[in-house]
Length: 197
Image (cartoon, rainbow, N blue to C red; front, side):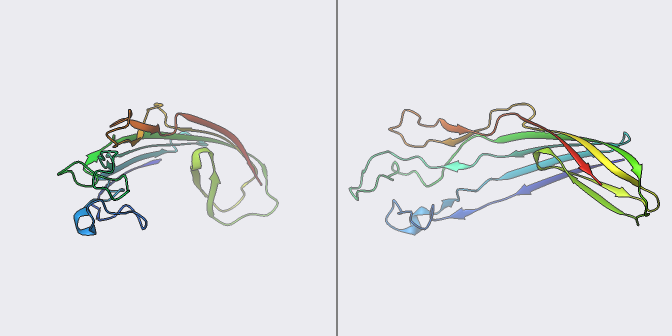
């Protein structure tokens, strides 16, 4: 028993402003048209769920997104408008790209059932939460069902501990020019125990 799913999104977003309070460098919004800040071309998600072993539910997913844009700026007030958002001549807004993001997560849940209910229950679906925001879903048949359930959960985010670089600096006068200023979440392991009755 198991499932496999793949989802791919192809997106294009353009805008002429970085926000409501952003001042256009060119003096007119018409000269600011370019990729939006969240113009991420590709987003791919792959997920595998398996219940091949009794009482054990395993979910693994991997997601990837292409690089987001950023703008090259001189770091100076070249046009004398007292706003330091000037770009080099001929360079548009959000013309550069940072680094793609790749991440993998996994969740495993093992359930032990015991005891007997005094009253039989109708068929239904049982949903139990686990680490890393992942839930396990199981069908429950009618008739006599166990009264108590204990689940042991393990969740891992960023399995490979990949360094996903973010916040690329586009200011030419900065010592961090074209370098990332942040990273995504490192590997994180969560363990938990759930009890239902």
